[in-house]
Image (cartoon, rainbow, N blue to C red; front, top):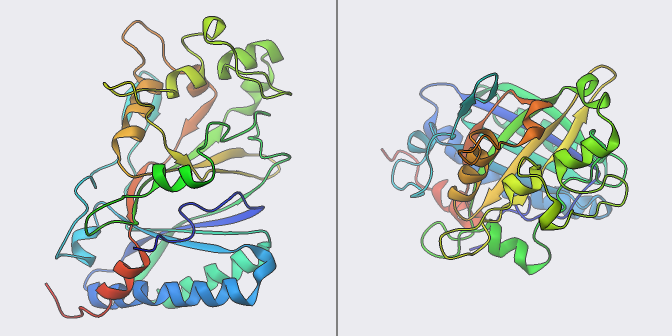
Length: 308
C-alpha cells in the first residue's frame, strides 16, 4: 500500500494545518471527496516540483465509523487526555485533519483552497494554523525541534502500519501548544538546557548520568518491556505572530501506544514527582487522535457509495 506523502515528508519551510467537523448526513459525499484528494495533490506536486509539496488527510476517532463504517483501524481511539494540577493536555476531537507542507507558502495555500472548495457544504472549518521553519529547524524556545526523529528508511518503519488492510497508514496525534514565552525567557540558558536535557546552541544531548529526571529528553525517551525504543515520527512546526508563539505538534506512528506513553510520562511523571518540566512553559490547548489511511484505501472507499 502507498502511504500518503505527508506522513514521512522531509522537513519543509511552510505548512498549513486545517481541521474540520462534518455536517451531519454527508457521509457519502465526504467519502467521495476524500477519494479525490490524492489526484489533486499529485497534480499540485507535479505542477510545482521545486516546492516539495505533500498533502495529508487523517480521519478523527469520532468520525471514522461514520465515513468508513465497514472497517476500523484496531488502535484508533480517543486522544489520551492528561491532567496534573494546572498542567493539562486536553482532548478536543475533530473529524478531519489536513496537513499541507511545501517550500513555497503559496503552493501550500493553493492546496488549502482546493480542500475548502471540495468540502464546501460537507464540513465546517474549525481550526486553521500556518506553520513555518524557524531558523535551523528550532522551536521558539530556541532549541532544535525533532532531534530524535528517525531518519531515512527508518522514518517509514516508525510511522507506518506494516501489515493488514490498513498497511501504509499511520496513527496521528495532533496538539496545538501555546508557549509561555515571557516565563521561559526569564530562565538562564543553563536552566533552559536542563529543562531540555541538551545544550541550546550546539544541540548536544547531555550524557545520561547528568541528565535531570525532569528533562524533556528523559521523559520522552522511553523503552518497552523488551527494551526497544518507543519511537514516533514528529512532523511538528512552530507557529507565531507578533504577540503569540507556539508549536503544532504532530506524532505519526504505526501504533498509538508510543505517543500515549510519552504523554503520560511528560504529565504524570515517574511516580516519584519527576514530570517533564517543559510542560511548565507551554500549554497544550488542543489534542486530537486521527488515522491517515493509504492512498489505495482513500481511492477504493470512494467507490463504495451508499454503504452503511
